[in-house]
Amino acid sequence: MSPEELLTTTRAVRRRLDLDRPVPRTILRDCIRIATQAPSGRNVQRWRWVVIDDPARKRDLAELWRRSYGDPRAGSTEAEPLRRIMASSDHLATILDRVPSWSFPACSGGRRWTTALRLADFYGSGLPAVWSFMLAARLHGLGHDADHATSRV
Image 1 (cartoon, rainbow, N blue to C red):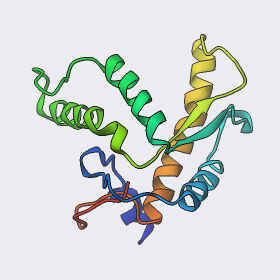
Image 2 (image 1 turned 60 degrees about the horizontal axis):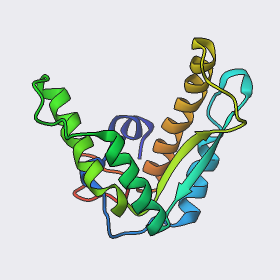
Image 3 (image 1 turned 90 degrees about the vertical axis):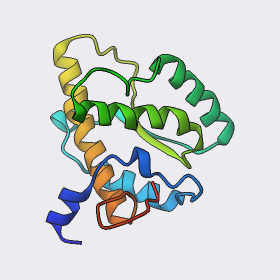
């Protein structure tokens, strides 16, 4: 895959998740290893990666997610692009507990992110790592693009 193809075909894949195919921990570890090489503010990473694949824990957390997510939003009066995004988010809320594994960065160190500067520092450091994780997952064959009918993540 060329760099241009990688950058232009990496997308959110909420509607195309393969719910029956586990993602090996070795692949997740490699994606996290690559993600931790992303640029970060002051070269400090105040986050750690969390991987959840225990079915009971996913079920409990998915229920919490659904309660905080609220009512489905796809039927809103928003413009079509936003309506499609919300339909995709609604779908994820209904299947979240069936997703084989969850991987995400979480803030560590007990710091309170209450000021604009601290929030900018946190997100400005964390989001490049998330993007790097997504690109690494794509390089490992996870994800979906227009040329592929199925997805593993």
